[in-house]
Amino acid sequence: MAGEIALLSNLTQAAAERKVALAVALTSYLPCTLAAMEAGLINEYAASRVFEATACVSEDVAAEVDSLLAGRFENRNPPALRRLVNSLLMRVDPEGYERRRQEKMAARRLEIRHGDHGSSTLFAELPSDRAQALYAACDRDALAKKRQGDKRTMDQLRLDALVERCLGGHGCAGKPKAQIFVHIDLPTLLGLRDNPGELTGCGDISPEMARAIAFDADSVWNRIIDEPMTGLPIDLGRENYRPPSAMRKYLQVAHRTCSMPGCNRPAQYTDLDHATAWKDGGGTDKVNLRPLCRVHHVLRGEPGWTFTTNDTGTLTVTTPNGRSYTEDPTGFA
Image (cartoon, rainbow, N blue to C red; front, side, top):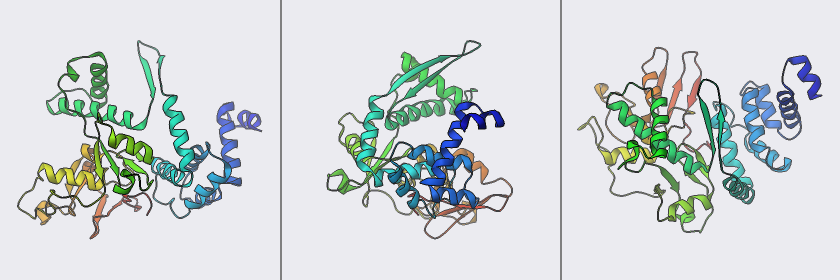
């Protein structure tokens, strides 16, 4: 069947096989995903994200995850949907998830593919925490140079920073460690529970991985224990427009990522935006301030875009075509 589809639709054999496999999954053990697709809540690409994320487990486990997705498809883009599927897989099949994580870690590799015109591509498959740390370090180096007036693009600066770090160039000399946040609740940290942790910008991680990071004496991570924190300001009123470093860190911990629904950029690499503008009476406090990455911070001022925040600080974004998207900090609302 896949061969016939490929001939009739100008698809490659591999692409046709993927379409057939997706169709079989949707019509057998992913009925909720199929229903969401038929209702127009997601497209075929988003459905394929669910299928690919569950292809590593049995049909029974995949079906259980699919049932838990019911009512959660709306206003989720494909990356956000896949993150949710992975979080559900961790909860439905924790032992299998940890086994697959260990297998992935053992299979880590670096590959080079040489292309045309003197350009090559490096592919690295490695644990998410290490990948996030490498990207964050290069992003920080790039941002520092951009602020000094460097005319290279951020993509160019990040790549050049990676090369400098790997080859021992001046870009890595005396650099402070990148700010990476790993969230873990206290009972899980103490081994009393096995709740997933969260690697900011990546999503949920297994409790084993979170504990390993938290107790590593050489860890570069900022371990965030989810309990009331002391020593951080709660409200600065209208005495200051720019929050001090303590308030900034509090907001980074509280929001974790850019407040724009579907954006996973870690909060430590964002701007702090006043929900109610300072000139309109908005305060510099934990409810009125929220992290927005530079792209979405600029987008807020574009015609037709509306950013509204309720009393709890939850952000709803309305696009020029009238569709609304609401921030979901936990991913399980």
